[in-house]
Length: 368
Image (tube, rainbow, N blue to C red; front, side):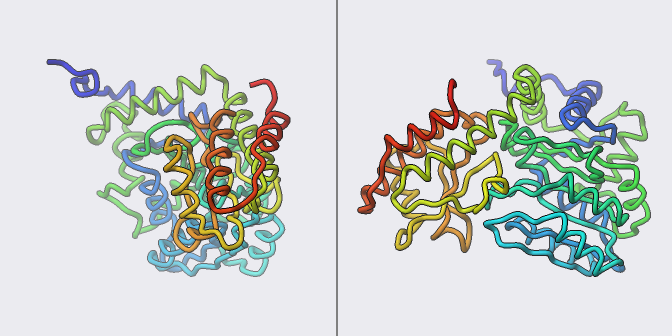
């Protein structure tokens, strides 16, 4: 008995290359694009281990937990690390980056997360890219959460290594990711004797065995289901129009923020300024005396379909996350999430106004 998900013809090199070209179109990039056969932590670690080494000095911008992870990897590579950490309820500024670069002229690598879904903030990459380019450092960007949710222009912004994943705003699986690589980044990795080679982490292997070979033969068997799912994501975004997909995420974020404020019950936006809030997910601060994890568990028990999650790690007691990305970037998902939170807050003895929340969502996101 045949099965459409199991009995698949091998993915050809030409089709793999065509999917790469479509990813390049999504990013509006002329740089090489490498599709990695794993979740986005694979190319992120590969980029850091390829671009950093003993003698390097890296500026690592920390606006959430992924920035903390990057700092650990950079130190493990032997690089000196300058951490530029800002409160998770805000975003870093280009002025802060410029100041750090001026104070440490030896910096030759900069790592930054575009949108931190885990903390709900987003950083001004275009302005930061100008500062990094003027300084001459290699610039790595984690755009896993922002791809499809907000403008992303690695070439125009001077990003040398731009990593994306399919699992958030693109609406796809977690098992495939991609990275655009500038000529400067290839040169840096080729000159690094510690850059991964003959390794699943290696970008240089993909260049030598795939790109430099004219994309004629794949270096190993690709993950077919994930590649086909990535292709389907790209087809859907192209059919909807990238601008429309971005607008839908922006509307979901604005509506969630307005609706949560109107709902009351002591909920507050976790990210203080709306301009710093990520369009992919809205984080909320639980009311004083209310455990966020317990509140989310109560909301999910009543409606398991809503895209709610408590903050991770130390944030679990205070942060609630509404993940309005991909298929959940709809007004119905926003209203359902607020209704579930409102009911859970009422059970906890908090006074809420769901009608006001619905009205705020409608006013912020009319006509859907």
